[in-house]
Image (cartoon, rainbow, N blue to C red):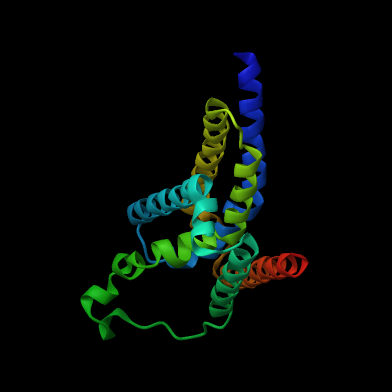
Length: 222
């Protein structure tokens, strides 16, 4: 039993260490927090549960079927990195350049003024993908799935199970930090909150640019 437990725990830690920097639940929590600014605590918990669930689904689907999906559409990991990087750059730029005055709820219909209704269509895109689990996460999961491959079916399931535990751990961290990001920002004060939001928007743009450049580099080398 010990002979199996040690490699299992080792692979779980490999998955957590590899996924944590690309998902970056702490930094991303600050990035997505403006989307939740008008929600109550209960609404925020409900929304974040769905985001964590979507993140798990994307990661698990990538782990199990990612290679087949890429082969089906004739795509490569560098292309996914390039496209995902461009999408993240676009989101970061929109946050950086958004200086529009707030629209009062009296000037829009009641359905439109409901923050949950406005947020509904943004939970998967762009909040879950590509901001929470994007091209970097997909690329890392491809690498981890290759690392966990084995000719023996039982060993493959064993390795995949360990990677799934890593994904679940990351999703738990996403839930914890997304729920509590507003509390940390409140300690910073309103002025510092604006500074943090702008800084995070700039970092979103930089992360997207880095992912896109990584994709271009791999395409040139390949």
